[in-house]
Structure formats: C-alpha cells, structure tokens
Amino acid sequence: MENSKPEYYLLRPEIEKAYGYSHAVKIGNSIKISGAVSMDDEGNPTAVGNMEQQMKNCYSDLQKILKHFNCTFNDVVKEDVFTTNMPTFLEVAGYRTEIYKNHFPTGSWLGVKELALPEFLIEIELEIHITP
View 1 (tube, rainbow, N blue to C red):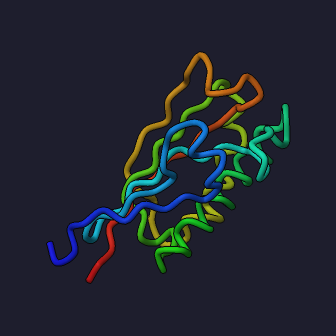
View 2 (view 1 turned 90 degrees about the vertical axis):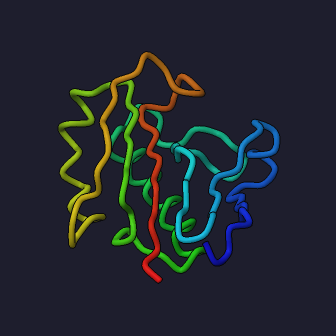
View 3 (view 1 turned 120 degrees about the vertical axis):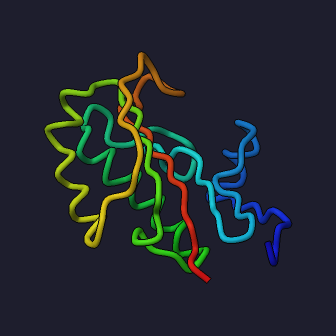
C-alpha cells in the first residue's frame, strides 16, 4: 500500500471523543465508516419515531464523510444496516435507490434489540474502496 498510515476523521469531534470512536478511518485505498445515526451536532437524536427521516439523516452524514475523502456512494462496496424495526425499514428501504444509482453494495440488514440510544431506529455503516 502506497499510504498505509491510518487517517482518522471525526464528523462531530466532541461527541465522538466522548463516546470513544472515530467516524471514519482511511488506510490506503480502503475507508471504514462507523455507523451513522440520526443525531444533531450536539448528539441529540433527531426525527424520533420516523424511520424514513432517520435513514435520510444517516445518509446525509455518510455523504459528508464520503465528500471529505473525495468519494461518492458509487465507491461504497459494503453497507450494513442495523435497525430496531425491520418491517418499518423494509417499507422505506426503497429510498436507497436514490443513494445507489449505479449499483448496490454488498452488506447485511440486521434486526437488533437496541442501538446506542433508545430513540435511534437505524444505524448504517459503510466500507469504501477507492480505485487508484
């Protein structure tokens, strides 16, 4: 790898430091992005009770991170979705066609008992491969 030293990126530095994680790490041509949830810049849950809007908020944050690394959703090779309500997620999952216009990545959709805060209904994490 040409540049194998990890490059860490914090979207909301104070929140991420308080919870103990980095939102993204780039090593060489790979980027791993921690799960995005629907929160404001102070870490408060947003769109409480609204799965579709929470999903859109997640993708909005993910897009900011991708842009930081000069990437788009076309560079995503893996997407894992965690949700506390799979039936409701399945009702709104069609929105993903607005995100992935050329191809869908690999990944998993997982129903979970809970996420970091009880108001979070969905969390989306990504893996990116940058073609040199």
